[in-house]
Image (cartoon, rainbow, N blue to C red):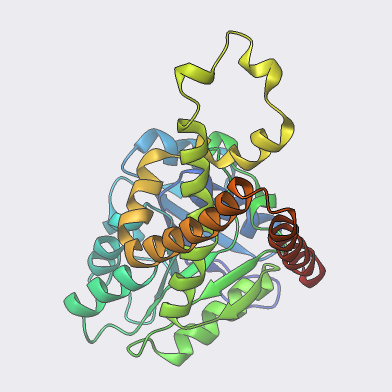
Length: 297
């Protein structure tokens, strides 16, 4: 396997980048780095060998391996698997990779992963927890696209054991590929994601499930407005992935759910009391906040 041997035009060694998990995110990450202009070889691994083979078949510089041991030549390894499996992969790879190699993950939760890795490998300093602020409700390498990562924020959440040089090198790599890198504490990441992305997915699942047989005529689809379809798009997301996320970030998700219940109770009270002023105040407040979010993008 001709990896970790080449040099680019300047004489510098080309990177060898590993990707564990070749679903939508892993396959898209390979495409993203490849199209960024960065010279690199890739080693990909998936428990479903058919998926990693599909990703490898697309480009001559991508090689599929049958076990994690095949990741040994990598300078960086990105773990793009469900959050319930990430820590185990980090722990296993810490015994396989060169001591200078860096492991980055793409999980939507961080505290659970960091705790498990730190507990099992307290001296391992080359793990840089990460989370690209991108994705799709679709799944699988066939749906992969470099555009999923293009010009998006990639959050890094180093913890006390993380070596600063590993953070700096990861940042340099990601910025070279066009990502905006944001470094933030683990707890802050999980708190904000619990109140935003995770709560939004939870709400989408609930909104679809509340369409019971009593209110579903045969011509239901003709009556569903675009607003409902857009708000519930992510109810089509991978069930295992989101079950893992809700359980891993349960405290923050439940806090967000409680806040949502309180806001729904306010709206319910205003409707029951036919209090137009209260409704206008609630809707107006949300209107202004949402427009501010657009302005900040």
